[in-house]
Image 1: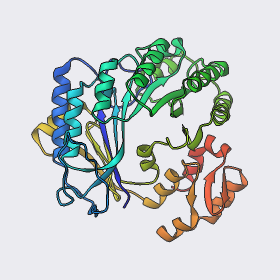
Image 2: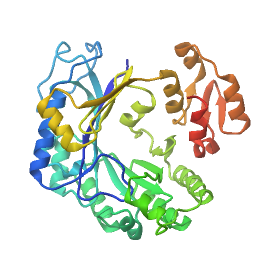
Image 3: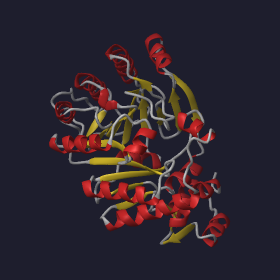
Image 4: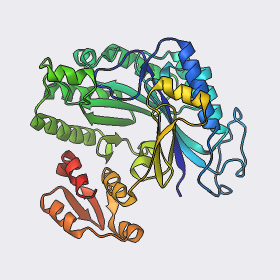
Length: 393
Protein backbone atom coordinates (compact mmCIF):
# COMPACT_ATOMS: atom_id res chain seq x y z
CA UNK A 1 0.00 0.00 0.00
CA UNK A 2 1.39 3.37 -1.05
CA UNK A 3 1.19 6.44 1.22
CA UNK A 4 -2.27 7.99 1.30
CA UNK A 5 -3.51 11.52 0.85
CA UNK A 6 -5.98 13.77 2.63
CA UNK A 7 -8.55 16.01 0.95
CA UNK A 8 -10.20 18.81 2.95
CA UNK A 9 -13.23 20.61 1.48
CA UNK A 10 -13.87 24.25 2.38
CA UNK A 11 -17.15 25.24 0.70
CA UNK A 12 -17.22 29.00 1.21
CA UNK A 13 -16.88 31.47 -1.70
CA UNK A 14 -17.33 35.22 -2.12
CA UNK A 15 -19.87 34.47 -4.86
CA UNK A 16 -20.95 31.48 -6.93
CA UNK A 17 -19.36 31.14 -10.38
CA UNK A 18 -21.83 30.70 -13.25
CA UNK A 19 -20.37 27.32 -14.34
CA UNK A 20 -19.74 25.81 -10.89
CA UNK A 21 -21.44 22.59 -9.81
CA UNK A 22 -19.27 21.98 -6.73
CA UNK A 23 -20.63 21.94 -3.19
CA UNK A 24 -20.19 25.62 -2.30
CA UNK A 25 -21.85 28.27 -0.16
CA UNK A 26 -21.62 32.03 -0.30
CA UNK A 27 -19.51 33.39 2.56
CA UNK A 28 -21.84 35.23 4.93
CA UNK A 29 -19.63 35.87 7.92
CA UNK A 30 -17.16 34.20 10.21
CA UNK A 31 -19.72 32.55 12.54
CA UNK A 32 -20.74 30.05 9.84
CA UNK A 33 -17.09 29.36 9.02
CA UNK A 34 -16.26 28.76 12.69
CA UNK A 35 -19.11 26.30 13.09
CA UNK A 36 -18.00 24.49 9.93
CA UNK A 37 -14.35 24.31 11.01
CA UNK A 38 -15.45 22.86 14.36
CA UNK A 39 -17.50 20.19 12.57
CA UNK A 40 -14.64 19.44 10.18
CA UNK A 41 -12.10 19.04 12.96
CA UNK A 42 -14.55 16.79 14.79
CA UNK A 43 -14.84 14.57 11.72
CA UNK A 44 -11.05 14.28 11.43
CA UNK A 45 -10.79 13.52 15.16
CA UNK A 46 -13.28 10.65 14.79
CA UNK A 47 -11.21 9.02 12.05
CA UNK A 48 -10.72 5.28 12.56
CA UNK A 49 -7.64 4.03 10.68
CA UNK A 50 -8.45 1.25 8.23
CA UNK A 51 -4.95 0.59 6.86
CA UNK A 52 -2.46 -1.40 8.92
CA UNK A 53 0.67 0.25 7.51
CA UNK A 54 4.14 -0.37 8.99
CA UNK A 55 5.71 2.99 9.59
CA UNK A 56 8.95 2.20 11.39
CA UNK A 57 11.09 2.98 8.33
CA UNK A 58 9.27 6.17 7.29
CA UNK A 59 10.53 9.72 7.74
CA UNK A 60 7.78 11.60 9.55
CA UNK A 61 7.32 15.33 9.79
CA UNK A 62 9.21 16.87 12.70
CA UNK A 63 7.23 20.14 12.68
CA UNK A 64 7.49 21.41 16.28
CA UNK A 65 4.00 22.95 16.18
CA UNK A 66 2.33 19.56 16.10
CA UNK A 67 2.70 16.62 18.51
CA UNK A 68 4.54 13.69 16.97
CA UNK A 69 2.55 10.46 17.02
CA UNK A 70 3.94 6.98 17.38
CA UNK A 71 3.19 4.29 14.82
CA UNK A 72 0.85 2.67 17.35
CA UNK A 73 -1.14 5.90 17.64
CA UNK A 74 -1.63 6.33 13.90
CA UNK A 75 -1.07 3.52 11.45
CA UNK A 76 -2.03 5.68 8.44
CA UNK A 77 0.85 7.25 6.59
CA UNK A 78 0.14 10.39 4.54
CA UNK A 79 2.37 12.27 2.12
CA UNK A 80 -0.10 14.75 0.55
CA UNK A 81 -2.73 17.11 1.90
CA UNK A 82 -5.02 19.05 -0.45
CA UNK A 83 -7.31 21.81 0.81
CA UNK A 84 -9.88 22.55 -1.88
CA UNK A 85 -13.26 24.15 -2.28
CA UNK A 86 -14.87 26.55 -2.57
CA UNK A 87 -12.30 29.17 -1.68
CA UNK A 88 -10.07 27.90 1.15
CA UNK A 89 -8.06 31.12 1.06
CA UNK A 90 -11.04 32.78 2.81
CA UNK A 91 -10.02 30.92 5.98
CA UNK A 92 -8.24 32.83 8.71
CA UNK A 93 -4.76 31.48 9.51
CA UNK A 94 -5.89 30.36 12.98
CA UNK A 95 -8.72 28.34 11.41
CA UNK A 96 -6.30 26.68 9.03
CA UNK A 97 -3.96 25.91 11.93
CA UNK A 98 -6.77 24.13 13.80
CA UNK A 99 -7.50 21.97 10.75
CA UNK A 100 -3.84 21.07 10.26
CA UNK A 101 -3.48 20.31 13.97
CA UNK A 102 -6.44 17.92 13.75
CA UNK A 103 -4.79 16.15 10.81
CA UNK A 104 -1.46 15.85 12.63
CA UNK A 105 -3.36 14.42 15.59
CA UNK A 106 -4.59 11.44 13.58
CA UNK A 107 -2.06 10.81 10.82
CA UNK A 108 1.67 10.43 10.41
CA UNK A 109 2.70 13.06 7.87
CA UNK A 110 5.69 12.27 5.68
CA UNK A 111 8.70 14.54 5.87
CA UNK A 112 8.51 16.72 2.75
CA UNK A 113 4.77 16.13 2.24
CA UNK A 114 3.06 18.12 -0.51
CA UNK A 115 0.50 20.44 1.13
CA UNK A 116 -1.71 22.27 -1.39
CA UNK A 117 -4.24 25.03 -0.82
CA UNK A 118 -6.61 26.37 -3.47
CA UNK A 119 -6.58 30.15 -3.66
CA UNK A 120 -8.57 32.65 -5.68
CA UNK A 121 -7.32 36.06 -6.80
CA UNK A 122 -8.23 39.00 -4.58
CA UNK A 123 -8.99 36.79 -1.55
CA UNK A 124 -5.58 37.02 0.12
CA UNK A 125 -3.06 39.55 1.38
CA UNK A 126 0.69 39.26 1.61
CA UNK A 127 0.25 38.81 5.37
CA UNK A 128 -2.28 35.98 5.06
CA UNK A 129 -0.15 34.23 2.43
CA UNK A 130 2.92 34.46 4.65
CA UNK A 131 0.89 32.99 7.52
CA UNK A 132 -0.36 30.12 5.33
CA UNK A 133 3.21 29.49 4.24
CA UNK A 134 4.42 29.45 7.86
CA UNK A 135 1.74 26.87 8.70
CA UNK A 136 3.17 24.46 6.14
CA UNK A 137 1.27 25.20 2.93
CA UNK A 138 3.93 24.67 0.26
CA UNK A 139 1.85 24.54 -2.93
CA UNK A 140 -0.78 27.00 -4.19
CA UNK A 141 -3.46 25.97 -6.70
CA UNK A 142 -4.44 29.32 -8.18
CA UNK A 143 -7.88 29.75 -9.79
CA UNK A 144 -7.10 31.95 -12.80
CA UNK A 145 -9.54 30.39 -15.35
CA UNK A 146 -8.89 33.15 -17.93
CA UNK A 147 -6.98 36.41 -18.31
CA UNK A 148 -9.85 37.95 -20.32
CA UNK A 149 -11.91 40.39 -18.23
CA UNK A 150 -15.02 39.85 -20.38
CA UNK A 151 -14.86 36.10 -19.79
CA UNK A 152 -14.16 36.57 -16.07
CA UNK A 153 -17.33 38.64 -15.82
CA UNK A 154 -19.27 35.98 -17.75
CA UNK A 155 -18.05 33.35 -15.29
CA UNK A 156 -18.94 35.57 -12.30
CA UNK A 157 -15.44 35.04 -10.93
CA UNK A 158 -15.41 38.22 -8.82
CA UNK A 159 -11.92 39.29 -9.92
CA UNK A 160 -10.22 40.70 -13.00
CA UNK A 161 -6.93 40.06 -14.80
CA UNK A 162 -5.15 42.71 -12.75
CA UNK A 163 -6.15 40.89 -9.56
CA UNK A 164 -4.65 37.70 -11.02
CA UNK A 165 -1.29 39.32 -11.62
CA UNK A 166 -1.21 41.12 -8.28
CA UNK A 167 -2.10 37.98 -6.32
CA UNK A 168 0.47 35.94 -8.22
CA UNK A 169 3.14 38.50 -7.35
CA UNK A 170 2.15 38.24 -3.69
CA UNK A 171 2.40 34.45 -3.82
CA UNK A 172 5.98 34.71 -4.99
CA UNK A 173 6.78 37.44 -2.46
CA UNK A 174 5.38 35.20 0.30
CA UNK A 175 7.80 32.44 -0.70
CA UNK A 176 5.61 30.07 -2.72
CA UNK A 177 7.90 28.17 -5.07
CA UNK A 178 5.25 25.73 -6.33
CA UNK A 179 2.25 27.42 -7.95
CA UNK A 180 -0.38 25.87 -10.21
CA UNK A 181 -2.75 27.78 -12.52
CA UNK A 182 -6.22 26.60 -13.62
CA UNK A 183 -7.40 27.72 -17.07
CA UNK A 184 -10.58 26.85 -18.99
CA UNK A 185 -10.88 26.45 -22.77
CA UNK A 186 -14.11 26.44 -24.78
CA UNK A 187 -15.84 29.30 -22.99
CA UNK A 188 -18.90 30.89 -24.65
CA UNK A 189 -17.77 33.27 -27.37
CA UNK A 190 -14.11 32.32 -26.93
CA UNK A 191 -12.00 32.53 -30.10
CA UNK A 192 -8.72 30.85 -30.88
CA UNK A 193 -6.86 34.15 -30.44
CA UNK A 194 -8.42 34.53 -26.98
CA UNK A 195 -7.16 31.08 -25.97
CA UNK A 196 -3.72 31.72 -27.45
CA UNK A 197 -3.43 34.91 -25.38
CA UNK A 198 -4.43 32.98 -22.24
CA UNK A 199 -1.67 30.45 -22.88
CA UNK A 200 0.87 33.17 -23.63
CA UNK A 201 -0.01 35.07 -20.44
CA UNK A 202 0.27 31.92 -18.34
CA UNK A 203 3.59 30.84 -19.85
CA UNK A 204 5.04 34.33 -19.39
CA UNK A 205 4.29 34.15 -15.64
CA UNK A 206 6.08 30.76 -15.39
CA UNK A 207 4.02 28.83 -12.83
CA UNK A 208 5.35 25.39 -12.02
CA UNK A 209 2.11 23.62 -12.96
CA UNK A 210 -0.89 24.19 -15.23
CA UNK A 211 -4.28 22.48 -15.15
CA UNK A 212 -6.07 23.26 -18.41
CA UNK A 213 -9.66 22.06 -18.74
CA UNK A 214 -12.27 22.03 -21.47
CA UNK A 215 -15.47 23.66 -20.19
CA UNK A 216 -18.06 21.23 -18.85
CA UNK A 217 -21.70 22.32 -18.68
CA UNK A 218 -23.66 21.18 -15.62
CA UNK A 219 -27.43 21.35 -15.89
CA UNK A 220 -28.07 23.06 -12.55
CA UNK A 221 -25.78 26.05 -13.20
CA UNK A 222 -26.61 29.59 -14.37
CA UNK A 223 -24.35 29.10 -17.39
CA UNK A 224 -26.42 26.10 -18.51
CA UNK A 225 -29.55 28.25 -18.40
CA UNK A 226 -27.83 31.01 -20.39
CA UNK A 227 -26.93 28.48 -23.09
CA UNK A 228 -30.45 26.98 -23.15
CA UNK A 229 -32.01 30.42 -23.54
CA UNK A 230 -29.69 31.35 -26.41
CA UNK A 231 -28.03 34.21 -24.54
CA UNK A 232 -24.65 32.47 -24.90
CA UNK A 233 -23.13 30.22 -27.56
CA UNK A 234 -20.32 27.72 -27.17
CA UNK A 235 -17.47 27.36 -29.66
CA UNK A 236 -17.97 24.45 -32.06
CA UNK A 237 -16.33 21.10 -31.35
CA UNK A 238 -13.70 21.56 -34.07
CA UNK A 239 -12.53 24.84 -32.55
CA UNK A 240 -12.37 23.33 -29.05
CA UNK A 241 -10.33 20.41 -30.42
CA UNK A 242 -7.97 22.89 -32.07
CA UNK A 243 -7.64 24.72 -28.73
CA UNK A 244 -6.62 21.46 -27.09
CA UNK A 245 -4.03 20.78 -29.79
CA UNK A 246 -2.62 24.30 -29.42
CA UNK A 247 -2.45 23.85 -25.66
CA UNK A 248 -0.32 20.71 -25.96
CA UNK A 249 2.07 22.23 -28.51
CA UNK A 250 2.41 25.62 -26.82
CA UNK A 251 3.20 24.19 -23.40
CA UNK A 252 5.60 21.56 -24.73
CA UNK A 253 7.51 24.36 -26.44
CA UNK A 254 7.63 26.25 -23.13
CA UNK A 255 9.17 23.33 -21.23
CA UNK A 256 6.05 21.83 -19.64
CA UNK A 257 5.55 18.07 -19.60
CA UNK A 258 2.06 16.70 -20.09
CA UNK A 259 1.58 13.93 -17.53
CA UNK A 260 -2.23 13.65 -17.63
CA UNK A 261 -5.00 14.58 -20.06
CA UNK A 262 -5.46 18.07 -18.56
CA UNK A 263 -2.30 18.56 -16.49
CA UNK A 264 1.15 19.92 -17.36
CA UNK A 265 4.15 20.57 -15.16
CA UNK A 266 7.73 21.63 -15.21
CA UNK A 267 10.01 18.66 -14.41
CA UNK A 268 9.55 17.57 -10.81
CA UNK A 269 6.33 19.53 -10.22
CA UNK A 270 3.56 17.10 -11.19
CA UNK A 271 0.79 17.13 -8.58
CA UNK A 272 1.55 14.32 -6.16
CA UNK A 273 -1.91 14.52 -4.61
CA UNK A 274 -3.97 14.48 -7.80
CA UNK A 275 -1.86 11.62 -9.12
CA UNK A 276 -3.19 9.47 -6.25
CA UNK A 277 -6.67 9.53 -7.79
CA UNK A 278 -5.36 8.23 -11.11
CA UNK A 279 -3.27 5.44 -9.55
CA UNK A 280 -5.94 4.30 -7.05
CA UNK A 281 -3.96 5.23 -3.95
CA UNK A 282 -6.00 5.82 -0.76
CA UNK A 283 -7.33 9.34 -0.23
CA UNK A 284 -9.33 10.30 2.87
CA UNK A 285 -11.80 13.14 2.34
CA UNK A 286 -13.16 15.41 5.08
CA UNK A 287 -15.82 18.08 4.95
CA UNK A 288 -19.03 18.61 3.05
CA UNK A 289 -19.31 16.45 -0.13
CA UNK A 290 -15.79 15.07 0.35
CA UNK A 291 -15.13 11.71 -1.32
CA UNK A 292 -12.77 9.03 0.00
CA UNK A 293 -11.20 5.83 -1.28
CA UNK A 294 -9.62 3.40 1.18
CA UNK A 295 -8.24 0.89 -1.30
CA UNK A 296 -11.49 -1.06 -1.59
CA UNK A 297 -14.48 1.21 -0.97
CA UNK A 298 -15.43 4.66 -2.17
CA UNK A 299 -17.55 6.74 0.18
CA UNK A 300 -18.84 10.31 0.32
CA UNK A 301 -20.21 12.89 2.75
CA UNK A 302 -23.42 14.87 2.76
CA UNK A 303 -23.41 17.56 0.04
CA UNK A 304 -25.41 20.28 1.82
CA UNK A 305 -23.26 22.35 4.18
CA UNK A 306 -25.92 23.00 6.83
CA UNK A 307 -26.92 19.33 6.92
CA UNK A 308 -23.27 18.25 7.05
CA UNK A 309 -22.63 20.47 10.09
CA UNK A 310 -25.80 19.25 11.82
CA UNK A 311 -24.88 15.62 11.17
CA UNK A 312 -21.40 16.10 12.61
CA UNK A 313 -22.79 17.92 15.65
CA UNK A 314 -25.42 15.24 16.33
CA UNK A 315 -23.72 12.03 15.28
CA UNK A 316 -20.31 10.57 14.52
CA UNK A 317 -20.57 10.68 10.75
CA UNK A 318 -21.82 12.66 7.76
CA UNK A 319 -21.33 9.74 5.36
CA UNK A 320 -24.24 9.29 2.94
CA UNK A 321 -22.77 6.90 0.36
CA UNK A 322 -20.49 3.87 0.43
CA UNK A 323 -19.87 1.46 -2.42
CA UNK A 324 -17.53 -1.25 -3.57
CA UNK A 325 -15.90 -0.40 -6.86
CA UNK A 326 -14.83 -2.44 -9.86
CA UNK A 327 -11.10 -2.02 -9.33
CA UNK A 328 -10.12 -3.43 -12.73
CA UNK A 329 -12.30 -0.94 -14.64
CA UNK A 330 -11.19 2.01 -12.55
CA UNK A 331 -7.55 0.95 -12.85
CA UNK A 332 -7.91 1.19 -16.65
CA UNK A 333 -9.88 4.38 -17.18
CA UNK A 334 -8.08 6.29 -14.45
CA UNK A 335 -4.66 4.97 -15.48
CA UNK A 336 -5.32 5.87 -19.11
CA UNK A 337 -5.71 9.50 -18.09
CA UNK A 338 -1.96 9.50 -17.46
CA UNK A 339 0.27 10.00 -20.48
CA UNK A 340 2.38 7.02 -19.41
CA UNK A 341 -0.74 4.83 -19.57
CA UNK A 342 -0.94 1.42 -17.91
CA UNK A 343 1.40 -1.56 -17.84
CA UNK A 344 -0.49 -4.41 -19.51
CA UNK A 345 1.54 -7.19 -17.84
CA UNK A 346 0.98 -5.63 -14.43
CA UNK A 347 -2.74 -5.33 -15.15
CA UNK A 348 -2.94 -8.99 -16.15
CA UNK A 349 -1.04 -10.12 -13.05
CA UNK A 350 -3.24 -8.03 -10.76
CA UNK A 351 -6.64 -8.79 -12.25
CA UNK A 352 -6.19 -11.83 -14.51
CA UNK A 353 -7.90 -10.02 -17.40
CA UNK A 354 -6.91 -9.54 -21.02
CA UNK A 355 -8.74 -7.24 -23.42
CA UNK A 356 -6.86 -7.76 -26.66
CA UNK A 357 -9.95 -7.44 -28.88
CA UNK A 358 -10.96 -4.09 -27.45
CA UNK A 359 -7.40 -2.77 -27.65
CA UNK A 360 -7.08 -3.88 -31.29
CA UNK A 361 -10.14 -1.88 -32.33
CA UNK A 362 -8.98 1.23 -30.48
CA UNK A 363 -5.50 0.93 -32.00
CA UNK A 364 -7.03 0.63 -35.46
CA UNK A 365 -9.02 3.83 -34.85
CA UNK A 366 -5.83 5.58 -33.64
CA UNK A 367 -7.29 6.23 -30.17
CA UNK A 368 -4.72 4.19 -28.22
CA UNK A 369 -1.27 2.77 -28.83
CA UNK A 370 0.79 0.04 -27.19
CA UNK A 371 4.46 0.94 -26.71
CA UNK A 372 6.88 -1.22 -24.73
CA UNK A 373 4.04 -3.09 -23.08
CA UNK A 374 2.16 0.02 -21.99
CA UNK A 375 -1.31 0.95 -23.22
CA UNK A 376 -1.80 4.69 -23.56
CA UNK A 377 -4.00 7.23 -25.28
CA UNK A 378 -2.86 8.86 -28.50
CA UNK A 379 -3.31 12.60 -28.86
CA UNK A 380 -6.52 11.88 -30.78
CA UNK A 381 -7.54 9.50 -28.02
CA UNK A 382 -7.21 12.29 -25.46
CA UNK A 383 -9.82 14.28 -27.38
CA UNK A 384 -12.18 11.28 -27.36
CA UNK A 385 -11.16 9.85 -23.99
CA UNK A 386 -14.71 9.22 -22.77
CA UNK A 387 -15.36 6.97 -25.77
CA UNK A 388 -12.15 5.06 -25.02
CA UNK A 389 -12.96 4.66 -21.31
CA UNK A 390 -16.43 3.31 -22.14
CA UNK A 391 -14.80 0.30 -23.80
CA UNK A 392 -13.38 -0.84 -20.48
CA UNK A 393 -16.32 -0.26 -18.14
